[in-house]
Amino acid sequence: MGIMIGSLGVLTVLSIAQQFISWGIIKNLINIAAFSFVISGVLEIIFLLPSIFEYVSNLDKVFIVAIITGTISIVGVVYSTYMKRVEYLSEKRKDAYLEFVNFMYELMIVNPNMKTNDIVENINKFQASILLWGSPSVLNAWKEFKQNNIDDPEDTGRTLHFVEILINAMRKDLGVNKVKENEIIKIITKVNRTPE
Image 1 (cartoon, helix red, strand yellow):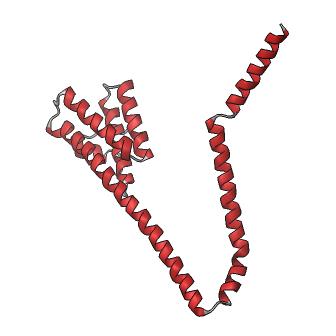
Image 2 (cartoon, one colour):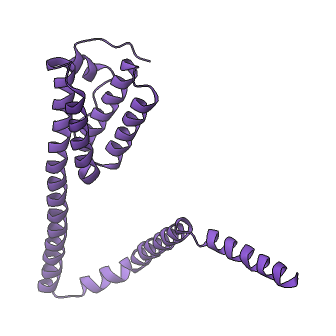
Image 3 (tube, one colour):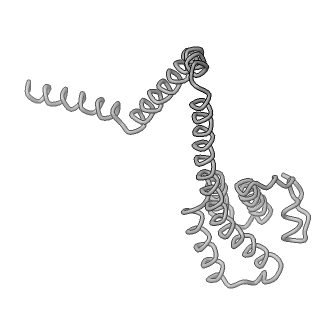
């Protein structure tokens, strides 16, 4: 009996420890530690600024010019690398998003009687693209769109509402301004939808 109670106590402690040492808590602790390091680093730089300025002002002008030139070069390289990455992602996302918009336009205007197999093929192709290249806001909009189709596939007005949210998320992702509600639907369907 004592062994059983002891084993139960150990299992309880292990269960609590397992819940405490979950990835979510560790992730939060890492985020807090990283934030603390960043804040302490910024404060240290602020406190050291007068000493840095005094040290730099005592240097020879050739060294000062070299330091400024080096700093500008490093900042330029970092910015250039960042912009190349942004351009690369934008190009990949643009192709995926354009496919979806073309598909929606064809489905709504050109070929409203598109075969189910073709619809599924287009949707699967788009989903594969955005899983790789889509931003979090586009993935969330896509998830809501799909969930709506599962919950209420017959409500066309509601589906169009989620299509519009998805297209606006794509536009934002590509650096284009959001279009006001109902405008995108007017363009791709030639019908006016009353706002919900």
